[in-house]
Length: 171
Image (cartoon, rainbow, N blue to C red):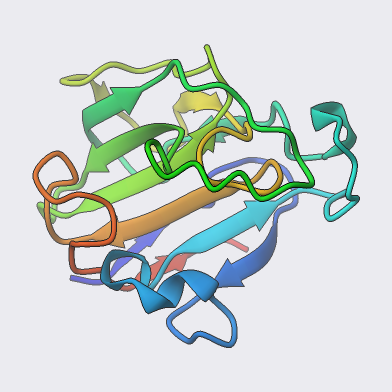
């Protein structure tokens, strides 16, 4: 199923990777992230090692759609920005998974440590705060990662599910 959702934040966002082609989305090489998006907020790509020098850091992340929270993981530290972290044990960092009415899943990743504001089993409404943008997981600077997949991320590890089309409205 194709889903169209709201943007994950109420500030001007810039897509740095997104869509279903390798030219515009470096994530497209793995099946579950074929339609992944990475959003940043100006200033970005500064090369600074200070989290506060990135506009996205600390921005409230809202649920892109109503649904059921199936995973809410917190406790991963932020990485130093400006350096690719290569955090393979916890590539999503702090993240939330929302099961949609379609039975498919949205995964929102790289949240700030201590900011995850929802729990598994909780129903969220569109726009409800779920955390803050951070730099946790396998990341090079603060950004909001989101992708849509068919299989449950609790059963299928990252990179092994079927990615599904994801579109955004009202922008």
